[in-house]
Length: 270
Image (tube, rainbow, N blue to C red; front, top):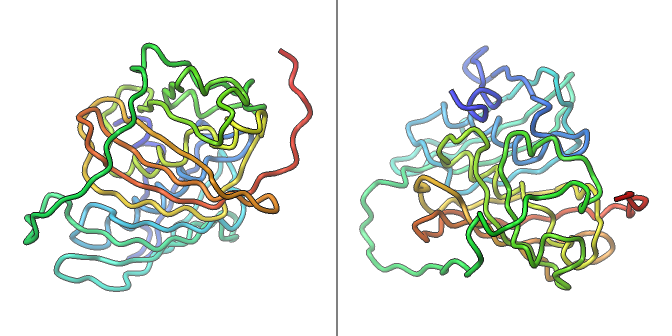
């Protein structure tokens, strides 16, 4: 079992309640990464119906999770149809809701009646070996999550404020070599540096308020390429759009989130 599988595992308590443990290995600073918490809730929802693949997942983050502590996921099957299952989940700790999720699940390998296709081509960036490891020093916050993920950033965007634009691109994979799956895509969509980092420099922790991920395909093995950008920042709230491609060049997920830009931390000595 991979680190990701083990540390997002859920155990059935009743037909609608599941227990889990929130690991501290996926933290941004002292807070569990939002995509990681969402993956725990989604793992419970996948066990409610016959459809294995999340195709639309919207998560509202109510308050930060607590690392190293027990959690409970309360689920509700809203509708089980022939091609789509829709369900809801609440992840709680100490009786306090930490996130609310609604998800639609399907089978991404099922035959389709419509054969027309449009897609988004991946950006051209250097391979992982020519990129730069994501840095907590550059972002201005400790990143325990790098114990679990390999995140390599385009060298032109790796230093705080160097890009001169609110954009970040790079490669990501599970740190123990496990192959990516549809649940990992939810994590990957929230694991890159905030794209505002490329424009504003040291930004510290930028908590997500809401994150929506649309999964388009099951990923092929290997690295996942990500590209994220922000074109709307107002009163400390940013709208970030992202996309993920697998090593074959196939678009595997798109994301959109609203995040909160907090007051800048004090400069970090280098």
